[in-house]
Length: 186
Image (cartoon, rainbow, N blue to C red; front, side, top):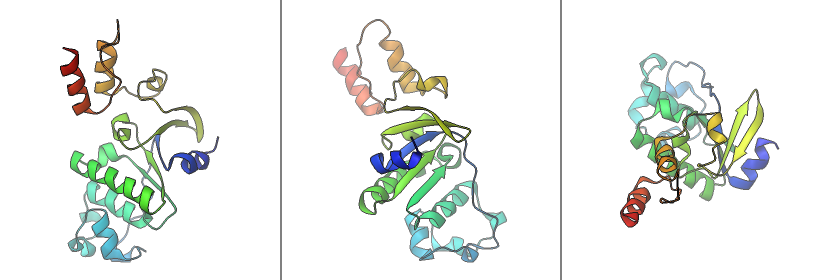
């Protein structure tokens, strides 16, 4: 199945693969072709002081956000490497932004990353892509086949370990729900 088909069905999908930044070097942020520059920067969590900065003076975090700002007007937004470019606070903010873009503005979003933790609480479908082909797909974070293609998150590993003999904990990727579940089972 083509990735567009998944996007039409789910809105936001996670792709386990490698991502290469598509933003070309520039002199200043003003040189980029961004519609409503100030509001786009505000939406991605940057202030107006960055407008005069040069490409060489921008951090990886800021560069990632600028790349997203250039894509906000696209119907399909493809982003990647959240786990290596953003801190936890920014990742949580971006997840909220992606939900809003998907629900209110009907944008289709592809999140590409090797870290499955990034997909928690945001994607409903995970695809594994190699050589531009979908080789595996799942909707379950506890699907053992998925972890043949990527590293298993610690929370999934922990729950699988506890449930190895009999099911004690629910399959849940939210830490607070896991804590509640542990409390209930003790």
